[in-house]
Image (cartoon, rainbow, N blue to C red; front, side, top):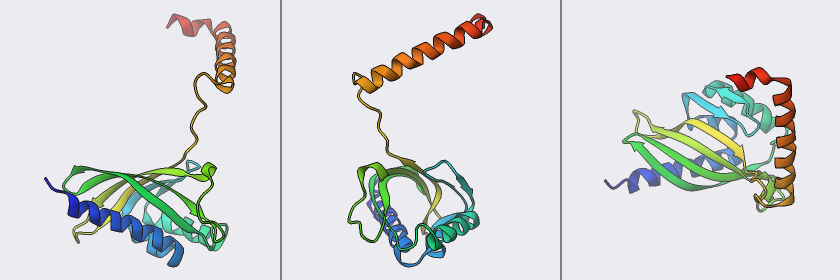
Amino acid sequence: MDRSTDEAAIRRMFEALCEAWAREGASAVDALYTPDSDYVTFDGSWLRGREENRRVHEELFAGVLAGTRLAGEIERVRFLGPDTAVVVSTGAVLWPWQQQAPAGRLSRQTLVVVRGEDGRWRVASFQNTRVQPLPPSGSLAMRLFAAVTRLRLAWWRRRHPEALAA
């Protein structure tokens, strides 16, 4: 089945989301979400519903995010059915003086998008996670982490022998 038309519409919706962030603010961003949407922010906060999403973003746009823009790129669109898709993207919030985000501020988002009765695609769920890869397994940092973890586990087992019996 050729889904290229649907994928193009989803990509346009994602671009509109990025553009709305910079130009139109919380109400325009909010219109691209379903009324019962879930939005999990990069710090783990969970915004339940379009109204809470709009309210929180209005506060942010009036404060710390004033003048920012959202830069993002879709990495993958995977259809789960005729009216549902999972979108994986990367992106970041950029301040006016930035052309690209510093590597430490890059986030990966997973969106569940649904086609409404009006034919438009909207975000039903949005999970935003900061990209923070672990150090390589053989690196000094990982070897130290493993050693400390083994010590803590041995300490815990000595204090909780009943857990080992289970």
